Length: 399
Ligand SMILES: Cc1cc2nc3c(=O)[nH]c(=O)nc-3n(C[C@H](O)[C@H](O)[C@H](O)COP(=O)(O)OP(=O)(O)OC[C@H]3O[C@@H](n4cnc5c(N)ncnc54)[C@H](O)[C@@H]3O)c2cc1C
Image 1 (cartoon, helix red, strand yellow):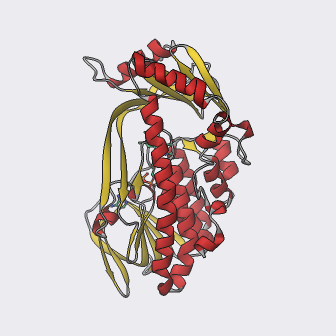
Image 2 (image 1 turned 90 degrees about the horizontal axis):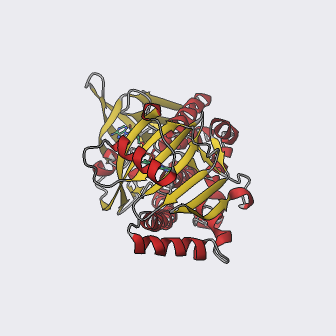
Image 3 (image 1 turned 180 degrees about the vertical axis):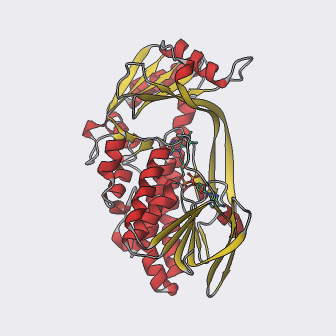
């Protein structure tokens, strides 16, 4: 372990790894610790939006991501068998006129592989951060080696908690959260793609159920279904039946992987920082994953943080102001994204004939008509999120 890192990152998920890469380009001595001993297998986030591709471009990784993923240029919305509208991402004002579908495990793999370029960055797996102490000299992290249970200590000038929604760093720094659990639950699985839906995303609504479907690289496709209490069927069987009923596609149970059921929550910290500790990504905030914005919001968090940390390291007097700026900008972006995710999930999960009739009218006759229709694709591409990345943060607000 380096004797004294300038920045210690707890958590090598997508957000911690992006931060490590950005700090690597600034030659900052960085230590990344993750409690995981083996790579993430499940798929989780798949949607990487244009503002995130702009961030990845700064690392020369945009093309690597595009080659490893599927650019999704159209999304079609159906209600009870009829097409309500079709989103076309071709004309969005971005160098990346699509959202990229790429499994989170692959995102992590690419970001991790790229760390080899930076001699200033060290990463260690199987190391769990279990405690944090701060004093005027720095921050001390108690570390537990997962394989052996051995205890050790890591020192740094600053600690960034990128350790996900159950963040130990957050708790150890005494930062509290506000949390709301949503009632909706979902079943999700990836299938070998024999759907003939090509490279398009599809949303299917009906009074009884909702189904979302996205292409994945390597001839796979993800299916997500709004769950109901199931009687005598497994979640996978429930998903297959719902897709058959609503979409008319007969999925093969044997071609499924990463089957999971999940709920949705909204969570945010009261403060993003305490002394030498600062939070980013899911450690700081969680929004409904329906809408695909959580990881993208975390990417923009750490892009801003990476721009502020060199100054905060050089001049400790700058730290409180830098961290407050970070919190103000990133909290605003989170609130807008989380509100959208909440409204989108609400609309997409309405059940019953009356509610479904309202949704049909609203999507077809309001959202897909002028003046809103021209704003829909930029909205889903996260181009209308305030401070969506550093290119869209006025310089006088940061430096
Ligand atoms: C079903 C689903 C679909 C989603 N789809 C999308 C999508 O399409 N687009 C999108 O933008 N977002 C999506 N999200 C959200 C996205 O997955 C999260 O926002 C993202 O994983 C957050 O990244 P992170 O690095 O902050 O945290 P995490 O991915 O949770 O990573 C945290 C890391 O910290 C490590 N860790 C935890 N505790 C410790 C500790 N004490 N010490 C050391 N290491 C520790 C963990 O092992 C892990 O590697 C989805 C989420 C779900 C559940």
